[in-house]
Image (cartoon, rainbow, N blue to C red; front, side, top):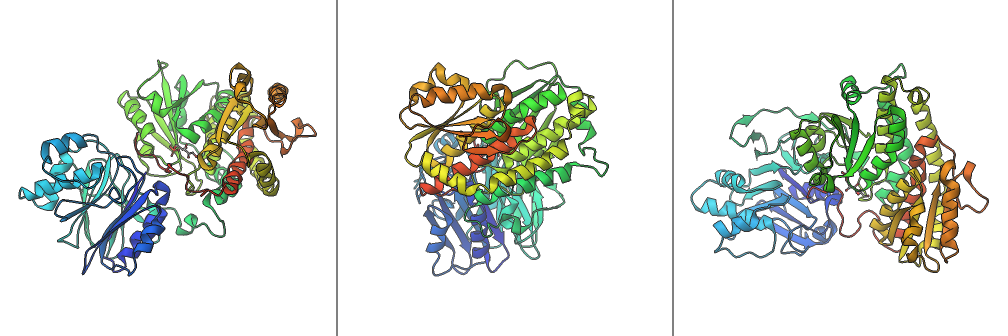
Length: 601
Ligand code: F6R
């Protein structure tokens, strides 16, 4: 949700900023902009993706310091006026911002009633406010600090004074921001991915901190002005992890990576003696809890649903799944000893974070399961488990969903074994995950069939339904989200038995209805529901496990452990969404209106 980058102390500042912005495009691609200070100061903006901005950079602009921004619009439409960087009225200050300033209107009325604004963004108000204090006689840094004390909301800011090409002022509150340390230069970025080709040494910033960044120093101060000494960490990622290689889209690469991710999770969570490598304190805290609350958004909440049945079976601990955006402001009556699990690929989702802040205030223990070490949700929860899925760049989440389910299974197995629950003792999870990886490969090799079926069923439709029961219903929800978010086909995932209670009225001649059948206990009922819609004209397609399949079923899943079928059943649905999007001619990796990391509520 907006990406910012900056560099100071490099002759090729423009190139570094552009490369960084391209790597942050997953955070937003409505518009972009760059400011580079050098012999001539240059500020350029454009609507659309970074390549539009790049096209404007001829002749190339040069300089040793600069900042850049790729935008996902919150305040104001994605126009050039609203694109960042924003400047103060006289142009002496330049600012990029990720986040939302909540009291922008009040600030404008109190301090800036005489100012003229070109766009509608809260960021423009912030840079005018800093300039207002500078005009009162404060140095740039002190004016920035004074503005920060007044600004309410979330921000990652990078501020430049056009009279000084040696310093970038940086501040962070609730929005992600890292400093990267180079040899004779320094960088800033919303995500380490952006600067991995420049450095692997990064420094985390805490909320309320400000940094004075020069080519040789990164001086961190807390809100009270105290200097903070913080060590860097070495990013584990390799720059090659974020390349698309020969793939046309990241989404396809990430779907294909799922078997490798399953094996990596086994490798990372298995001790040499075969036992599970999970912090004993985490297990002890969970054992002492009476209910698990999984709090998440979108695909991650669907992963929570997919984990519910096996978690309860293996641990005998009740599990509730809640949407973060609902839970925080509408908290249900909690059990006596709740334990919170935050599922979040990015570890930055603002809706989830606001709940974590509240459960922390209430003193409840928590665990974040995330793909991003050092992310906000990871830092603020009591415990963290990593997904080890490698960077997920396509906006539509695929491998993070299956990794979240697999890591939840590792946790359930470890807890169930500790509690000596029979079902957990009998469950050879690491072996089963190995079988899942192989079965995923089989499905991934069915691309040709899936492409043909997608063309046959989804080419001429406005809407589509996925149906199933139990885990198959939960996969249906995820399958429908994937299809709608990238192909724009209006898709819904339904509990198969619920259709006849209202939604069946939407079935018309040739409406696609895709049934998922992996459970012997409910499979026949789902088949009955498919029959009901077929007799009303629906075009039905069945995804079934080999052992439950009927001769006419179109997509056959290899048989895997009944508790883990979601890990496999989702794979053909991801590919269906991918092909439906390609066939409609849309950008698979960058669907309209969306961004990968949703850092605003
Ligand atoms: C959909 C998708 C989103 C995210 C949701 C939560 O493909 O990726 O629904 O799952 O925005 O994001 P995280 O997991 O980063 O908290």
